[in-house]
Length: 109
Image 1 (cartoon, rainbow, N blue to C red):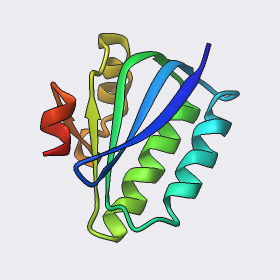
Image 2 (cartoon, helix red, strand yellow):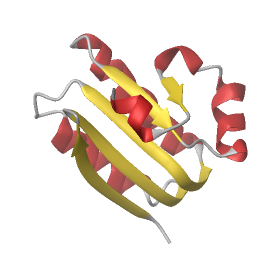
Image 3 (cartoon, rainbow, N blue to C red):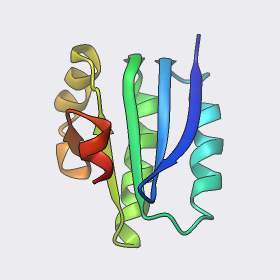
Image 4 (cartoon, one colour):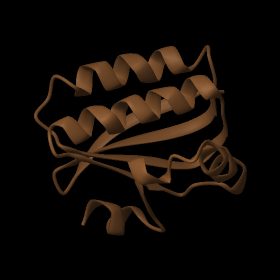
């Protein structure tokens, strides 16, 4: 089951991702990120402790969001990265596009 929920903490937009982020579920995330791009928020936090899997389609969306944030001097933070998801990011060599934090409080600070 796939779920994406949004909250705001300390001026950062937090997206809570749960389940599998693959080609079919990435459509929901793409729509959510598209609506966020029209907002003035410059800090995006992806809380992904409940993300079990990410495909190349999901990885592409995360990278697009990070690049878009960079154009407005924004930042992307990741919290709660599971080992199997972390491996995907490491193999893709994209660590420069986000900052990883152990807790949500640290990410939004």
